[in-house]
Length: 377
Image (cartoon, rainbow, N blue to C red; front, side):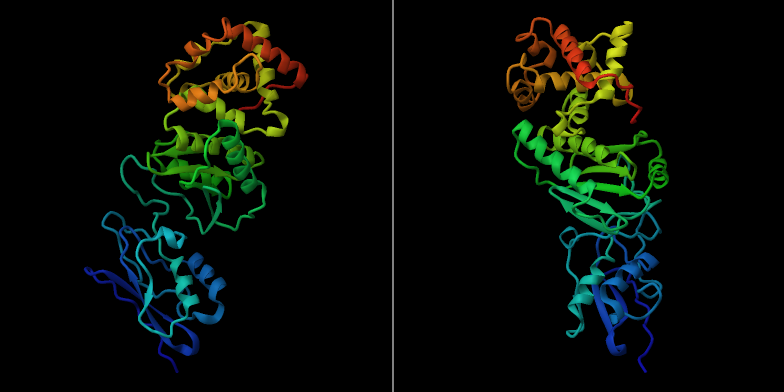
């Protein structure tokens, strides 16, 4: 009879952590893992299920798939973490001290190496702390690494939305495809998403979806809802603009995201925005002003009507025959060196406010009577 698994010892110093698992025919296999800074070995039920699905009856031992104690405690936190990372994301290599170890077993154990903390584990001041539920699956859609706790269909609406917005923006803005990874964390429901936002201690505002960056990593956070595909297109537009241009004026960043979140086959129409702006214009509570939008510097200062007006200006600049072709594209490529867009626009259009008002009137006739859009924030 094979001996039961022996708990792995975790040296306080050294370069490796060992875990012992029982494989085929009761043979024990001693697997050696390089020590990764901030990484852990986890014995959770989710990890066990993943491993069981992958290798079936090849691995037997404790319920968790790893003996108790098979973890290293970080110097800042004592919490366990779980992270399903691609092999190219993890530094170091996984080797077996037993030459007969199954390569499939070794590959399966890679998913138990974790590189991002889970709920309650801080990273560092000024950084996003972690997802509330560690992702178990990653689907790559162009530059987007969509991380979920359940498999995602590569031909489903979420993946299709990300794929299409990338292609549409490349074509419209004349840019090369983005190759730097953009992480998309997709939460199962609103409750888990809000719990994650609450765990950030006020560092993130509440939005139905968010794009954040610390300069080196770009991340999108969203949760499943009926408007998920649209949310993903909107936040993906922010991420792609950041990858291409870095900093973009706030109104233009939001206006382009509102523009590209809609279906290109419908000419990027936002009839809800059109109805709201037309009603405000008719009642005299609003007048278009690009200079006013340019003075807004914080996203928390943007109202729903500001989002709508930003979309209207972008729609005018990209689709109106009265604007020189490539005007907005060349302005973006210049990186703001030409000054405010409103100043440059007046070199070609004497009264841009009157032009955008007439553009709004034409759009209103196309949309017909529509109710103003609901609050998507």
